[in-house]
Length: 137
Image (cartoon, rainbow, N blue to C red):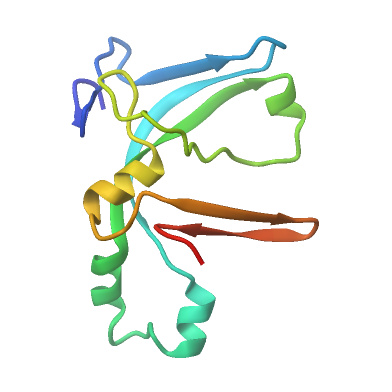
């Protein structure tokens, strides 16, 4: 939303949306607008199998795990962004919580849940991978 703040970031725009765009030297680019929503973190399969989450405690677990964060909705992508097989970008960069850039997903998590470290680890493999947020495993 225009003229709305999210931590240090403040959106000011004239078209009714908080627009952004990024272009790279080789010609790839994307542009879109920022949105804000609530995300819930967890491993649903492991939680269900272990019995940690069930219908009786779902509301409590939801309240415990939810975070509010901004995200980008891509409206147009060109060159490599359009041609690659990946279907999304998760910004994990540092120093994003400024007046002109909203906080990253990791920063939003650490602001709302101070007990969770602003760390992440990623393990890639040929047939998948694993991502840990808020610490290390």
